[in-house]
Length: 318
Image (cartoon, rainbow, N blue to C red; front, side, top):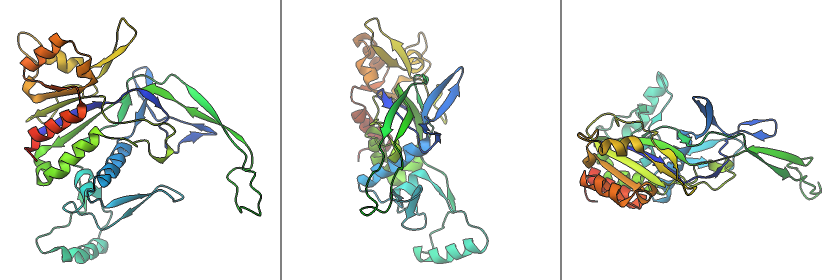
C-alpha cells in the first residue's frame, strides 16, 4: 500500500530566502514554470521542520540543529540508527566513509549485537518535493532600515554595523502546495512514529527556518490523499488551482482528481482510495460533496482529523 498526498497551505506573505542575497537585496528562491517564476520552499527546509516537530512530540531524533554557530551546523547523538531514531528512519542518511574508515565504524558498532547490520546509506522513507507557490512572483519588495550600532566601545567590543543600511527584501503573497509519499509497508515497523509524522504534517510550521521574516504556517489548508496499491499517484501531484469566484473570493480546487472521480460513465479514479479534507471541502457545494461520498470518497472539513483517519486506514487502530 502506498500513500500519495498533496498539501496546500493558506496564502500569506512570505520572504523565504535562506542566506542568498544580491548586494543588500534578500532574494526569494524561485523556479521557472512556463513563462513565469514561482517562489519555492525547498524539501530540505520542510524535512528539517518535520524533524524538529517530531522532536517536540518526544520522538528520539539523532540530529540536532545548532542555532548559535557562525554557519549552518548540526550535531549527531550517535552513528545513524534507523531502529532507534525517528529522523534516521524517515529521512535517511549517508555516512561518507570508505576503506579503513568503514571497517573502523563497523568495529565500533559491533556493540549493537551480532544480528545488527550497519547501513552506510539509507534512502528516505518519506518522499517529498519542493513547495511551489500557486501564484507567480510579481517582483514585489519591501524595504526596512537597519540602524547604526552606536554602542560605545568601552561598553561593547564589537559592532553589528558601522553605518545605517536600507535592506531590500523580495516578498510574495501566495499559497504553496507540495506533494509527499510514503510506502506503508516500509512504515509499519514503526507505525506509531508514522502516526506522529502524519500529525506533524497536519501541524507543520517553522519551515522557513531562522532566516524567516514572516510567520508562514505550512499546515494544510486543504489536502488530497490517495491510498493505493499503485506505485504512482496517477495524477498531477501539483494539482491545486486557483478558481476566482464572482464575489471576488478565490477557491483552491483539485479539478483533475475531483472531476476524475465523478467522471461518467466510468470514473477515472476509484473514489474509495481518496481522502479529501480542509477548505477544499468547505468550498464544495452540498451536491458535489454528496456525489463524492456516494463514490466512496472520505471527506472532512478538518485536515488534521482527516490525517488521523488516513493513519487508521493505512496502519490500523493505534
